[in-house]
Image (tube, rainbow, N blue to C red; front, side):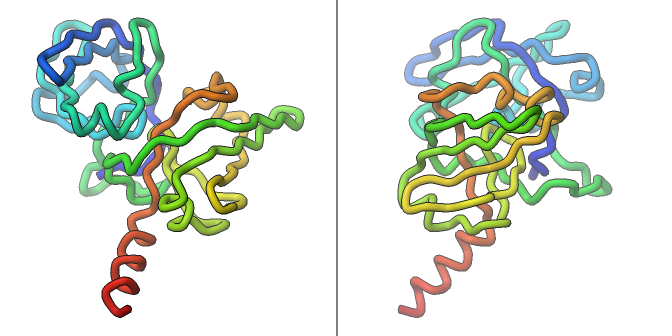
Amino acid sequence: MFTGLVEGQGKVSGIVPEGDAVRLDISVPAGIRNGLGIGDSVCISGCCLTVIELIGETASFQAGTETLSKTNLGRLADGHPVNLERSLPVDGRLGGHFVQGHVDGVGEVVSVDRDGDWVTMWFKVPVELARLMVPKGSVTVDGISLTVVDVKHDRFSVALIPHTLEVTTLGIRTEGEVVNIETDILGKYVEKLLASRS
């Protein structure tokens, strides 16, 4: 379980094909690396992956076919930045919202509107994901807990403060780029309950 409050950014330092899967080597900042162990869960741009090896400043992970088909991890290349968050400790503070690290699908950046230091960003998503979103509700984009501003049939918008733009990869996202989307788990349960009653 995560909160969607990104702790820092890492950089892809290696991608090794392993059959239909890949091994991701990521250079991890010291503040996140301290206390990290084999078997720990780390949210990598919204995807919960398990640490399989630690050598120096590099943490290694494996992404299987399901993860690669549902996320943007298969599009990563050496040097690409990724958002990082360690799993939430039992006594931790929940500053964002409950994020599972189970990406529902990908979205596309369709507009980046700047207003001084702030940015309003619109994302196009599958209709079935947009249906689970509400204005002022929570959504996770590339592992970042954000508040939905507006929702249309197949898209939604968020308002990004300067801090978010500075410490996450959303600060460098441009139109046409693909991002990982996880909708709020509460919306999924409500939809399931209503579907079972009808």
